[in-house]
Amino acid sequence: MSRQARKKTFVALLIVLLSAACEAIVPKPTEKTGWSCRPLPESFQESHLIGIWQNTGAAGTATDEIILREDGTYKQMYQKAYGYRYESSWQRWWIEHRPSGGIYLHLEGMRYCHLTDEECARPDGGGGDWWFHDVCEGRLLEMRGEVVLAVVGTKGTRHPSIIGAPRGIALMHMLPSSDTTSSFFVLEKE
Image (cartoon, rainbow, N blue to C red; front, side, top):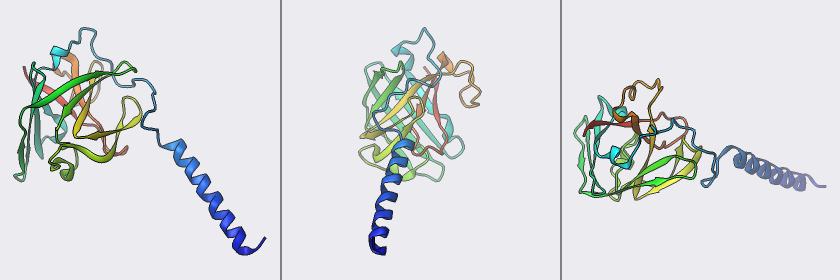
């Protein structure tokens, strides 16, 4: 075998090995691994989501609030410390009961303002073409034209921003990368 043929064989083998390694490391978007976040209180009802929720991760640098109304509409109000301000019109929200036992809150048209100013300014909302990490199900998901929040319980948590959260629930952001930390919306006012 010539040197050039060995080199081509080596490169092809390297590509196959790297592809296999990536396949093993990165979860598939449809992978089901069960719900690994804190369970909701047994008394949880959809009506417990109604109220004004504030993102605890934005403290000091921004305020990000959502108002969830009983009629299935919500409004987002976001203010950055340096002056960027956004307020949505009333838009649709709905919940999804996952096969894993968890619950997602879908907010159509909501702007994703967790960690990235670029995504927050997206006029149609959501996370665009990015894949987001769902730590509750250990999978990746897209959020095109919407933001999806995991509805999680807070009982027994040690996370300082959600200890003592009203109704024992918090709304957790999906993560733009696996090395970022979660931020939560906590009920501020009914």
